[in-house]
Image (cartoon, rainbow, N blue to C red):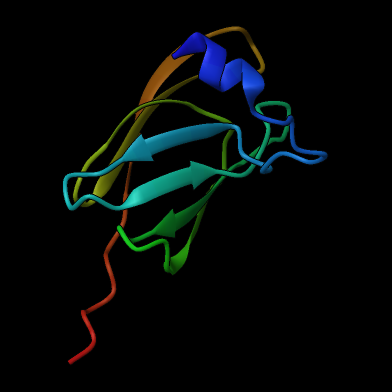
Length: 96
């Protein structure tokens, strides 16, 4: 397998993502913001790759889990205090 991977040409550009997560519905959450930004931004896609939407959180997080209606993560405040935090969200209603 290693030989096959090494034989593949290296792309000139790579996708701009900084983390990948799956939620319980099977949606792929692509972190598009680097950790040096003061926020966390996701592009959310279904199993076929169609974009379902975006979500931006007001802090840069180390993401532990994405649930059906929450994002669980960790950050360190400006004063050095570590925090475990959870952001709740509401999914849009499915199209008929």
